[in-house]
Amino acid sequence: MARPLRIEYPGAFYHVISRGNEKKEIFKTRRDRERFLEYLESAVNRYGAVIHCYCLMVNHYHLFLETPEGNLSKVMQYLNGAYTIYFNIKHCRSGHLLQGRYKAFLVEADTYALELSRYIHLNPVRAEIVSFPEDYPWSSYHAYIGRHNAPDWLNIYFLQGFLGGDEKQRCIKYRDFVKDRLAGDDPNSSQPFFVSTILGSEDFVSRIKEKHLNPEANSAEVPELKALRSRPTIKQIVGTVSGRLSEDPKLAKKIMVYLSHQYTGEKLNVIGEHFNLGVSGVSQLSRRFSRQLKCDHELKKLIDVFVRELNLSNVKI
Image 1: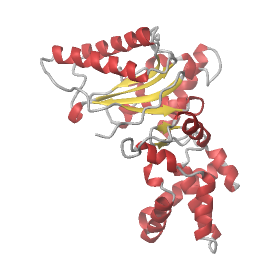
Image 2 (image 1 turned 45 degrees about the vertical axis):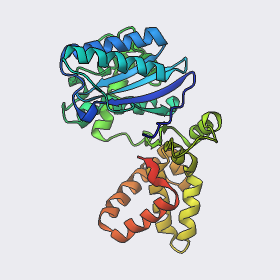
Image 3 (image 1 turned 135 degrees about the horizontal axis):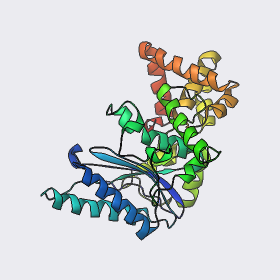
Image 4 (image 1 turned 30 degrees about the horizontal axis):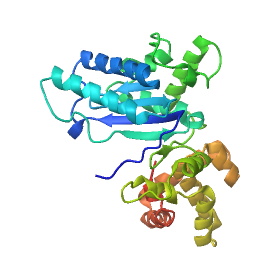
């Protein structure tokens, strides 16, 4: 089995996802979930991890955590190992509880932390378990909107610090921030993207590659390295598309905006500056182009050509 790419350093932030083996339940009872949260608290005390938000689903869980000591592997080995032992004893079973290796996406927190927390807290809504995130009891959302006091091991202040105001105002702002996504009314949000195992801007990815990526590492053993080493920039998108469509600048611009919006992860205002558009113009153009692709097969083939040339197939939107 190929090894996952693990980039660890003091102060790193991660979005961690761990799923049940064969997509089976990993939480059967209320006590299971309570015990898992106890192990989270223990991971904070033992390894200095900082838990910023969580969501426990039926067959998987999400964490947004920080490792001041650069020890993600130790944190996760303890957390998943301790919970597996508990679960197997409690439910009279043996063997693997969790599916292979957990996924850990390195996150540029200053840019994507809020958006990621919203994504995590809306998981039960996307899964159609509840209509609103406040109706789901097993996430940190209640602490963020002031319904419950945050336990000592849960740090809500880092994320709320982006919002400003007093404690009550921050709770209201966060609730409104999450509900904006439910209503689809947040055109100024970042377009999250995953390049291999990194969630961040072009500059962040470049810094991580320079500081933490071993140039001698084997891409066959760690497949994520291939995506990291070949990730295109907005300038590369512009160069590739304009070079092929120099005789049709109007279509070229649409394609460049669409690809930049879908694959670069830059904020709408940054993309707009490249193409002399406002944030709403970028969003609207990209949505219209997406709809056009569904019914225009020749245009879809052209986009596929650019995706291959720019090696975008490894970029998970």
